[in-house]
Amino acid sequence: EAEAGYRLCEQALALDPDSGLALIMLSLKFLTPVSQNRSADPKGDLARGDELVSRELALYPNSAYGHVFKAEILMDQGRRDDSVAENERALALDPTAVDAYSNLGFTYLKIGQYEKSLELYDKAIQLSPRDLSLLFWYSGKAEAYFGLKQYDQTIEWERRAIAINPNNLSPHPILIAALGWTGHQAEAHEALQRYLALFPTGPRTIAAWGALRDQLVNPDPHYLEFWNRAMEGQRKAGLP
Picture 1: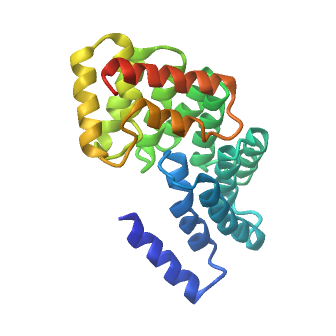
Picture 2: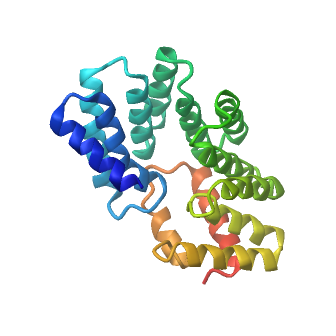
Picture 3: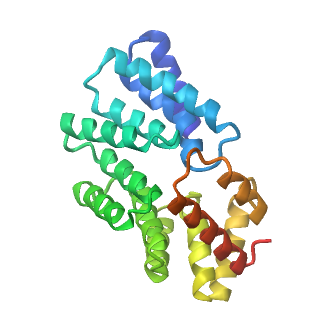
């Protein structure tokens, strides 16, 4: 029901253009498709999300979640050091800002520091074990295990994520890849068919995943290796 929520944010801003909460929540309309690799215009969406978050921070410079959202934008722009600094600023303002820990987890994932990534996701889960973002944290842990080539752990954590919401895209691609690498062909084929049925507009070929890979901004060599290995696992699972 995200679109209904975004319309409410727009109504809130019409009543009060300085509503910080409405500004940062509306930014998710543009940031979420980028983070989930389903944006048709990643640079444009990042720019629109950044405009909203920057307005919020100009009004409320001590907004912890303003800094969390700014960190996510910087991470997607390939400015990893700046992203880390923004997340650490958020935690200095509010040590319970759990999304700063998960942001840091993803940042370290993208530079190949997989053990550090696991520690940060575990910290977020420990602080907020019933969080609405738990699916993404479980999936983040799974991706860190995939980076470490611990495929059985990858499968376990992606399945935990899928159990929370089978209709969310995030856990499926790496689950398929991990099953492909472990030689569980029947399970890999089943997971692939489930993905193709649930997400008809998602990438449906290796070439389509390669095109998304090529849109990455300033990718670290570790993250390119991660993507290429994921694509090879999907190929093993039967993705054409």
